[in-house]
Every structure is written in C-alpha cells, then in structure tokens.
Length: 65
Image 1 (tube, rainbow, N blue to C red):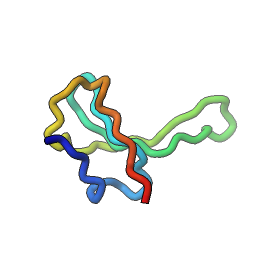
Image 2 (image 1 turned 180 degrees about the vertical axis):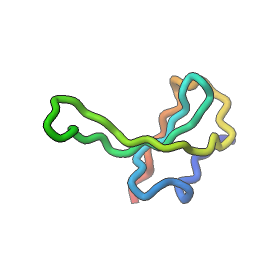
Image 3 (image 1 turned 135 degrees about the vertical axis):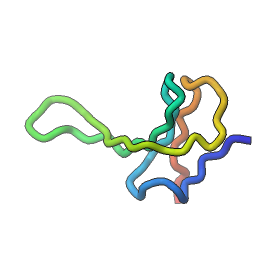
Image 4 (image 1 turned 90 degrees about the vertical axis):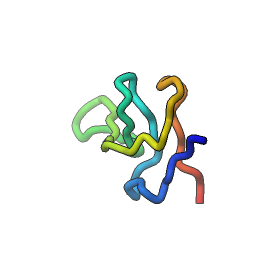
C-alpha cells in the first residue's frame, strides 16, 4: 500500500506529488515573489514511495501535527 513517509520530507514541505514523467517532488507553501505579481513554490526531489496510480491523483498534503 502506498504511503508517504513524512519523516523524510524537508521541514518546510507541505505536499508530495508525482508528475507525469513519474518523478516525485516535495512542494513547499507558495509565496508571492518579491517585486512581482506571481506566486511560486519551492520544490525538491522526493522518493516515489511505491506510488503506481495516476499522477493526477497523487497530491498528498502533509498531515497536521
């Protein structure tokens, strides 16, 4: 069974998701870029954790403490 191991996540990671190419990423809380009018979120490589479903359904939010 698929389960994200949040102990492996960076402290600031808020979501885990897989993209269409089969790569997984940790996503941080989005913020507005200074002196711009757009949002961005840091993203780093993450383990796949055995996920084999549709990438469009992969988004997992970090559980609240």
